[in-house]
Image (cartoon, rainbow, N blue to C red; front, side, top):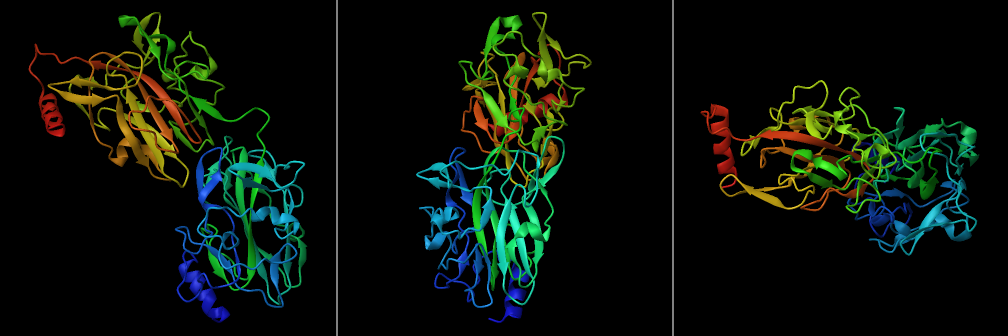
Length: 502
């Protein structure tokens, strides 16, 4: 295949899949090595879907056999017949970024890590130095550098990807708490002139913002004879060049990780009028467990995220109870309708400044939009999951279900893993989530949760997530007033309930 035909093929198709007649398992060349179909982040349980193997669902990256003059990263190129040093599909994972002492990987600094026996291990026995701290700027030649060589007679191009959100693929970006955007495509089509050999930093690539999550992240460095197209995710078919994948350490900041927790009463009065204490999973050391999010600030309810050191806004163990659900003016809470309540002076009372609008009536079908709604922000390019818990039987825990309204079964896990698509910002009702039946006629504690992974059916409200936010609200429901004629809305709502659960 001539260079012009291959260039056209790549630019049109984006190199996102194996191209018939171009690359097959019999084509020797250079491929990527990042985990595909195996653990990429063992501590998080995240499986990698990086474009590595020819037959993989994510596509792959391929560079044709080297001929003089050559284009490569490090001192030379290891030829392969497929990704992961030819071991496809994975597992096992090849650990090529450690280069087995041959210097092939070309990463000058910092030191890469690898995965051995399901455990992340530094390639340097003395330990891996980090690229820098979360949400700090990484400077080429100071914090990171890669050795590249272009012995061809034409300009080549260097690109670098970083999986800042540790999602197992490259794409999109993350927001730092101060609002700075950290794209995962950190370094875009830097020209490497003919005859150049040395650190890429000499060519003056711009610095880039490190993402907001501490730990290890997978990087892909690619040196190619063609520039890569907009929205590049690490795949592509090139006539020349090399790709190298590295796992690099990102250091936490000085003030600790950006963690967010729940606020519902634990070991304090949840329903004063009934004398019921809450056992909701809130505090780290509590008997009920807790919920937490290692937030990047990219997935949240309302207008902002309050970072905390423990549940109940850091006041653990309870009491006192923090009343975080009343943080309406600060924009943290996000609940648009109905009005939240709180516990103050030994009573259930509306939050200050609200009239106390109820969620609805017992046995009423609760619709998203007119009856309940919350503002959702998913600034990531991946799907996020929404769950809602309501303590219908008012026993201080979110488990099981209640039987109400002529035998209708109302689970306390009210909304189960409803998908919030990447990039969505707006009221949850805009996504058309299904209605649910009200199964109480008094005060109930509820938990609204956004998470990067789905939860189990009959979830009890606890779990540790890498993204998202949890907000807890005390809501009020009225009983059916049988002394007055039902309104047309109440009559139609009850008919819908019976049909829904027929």
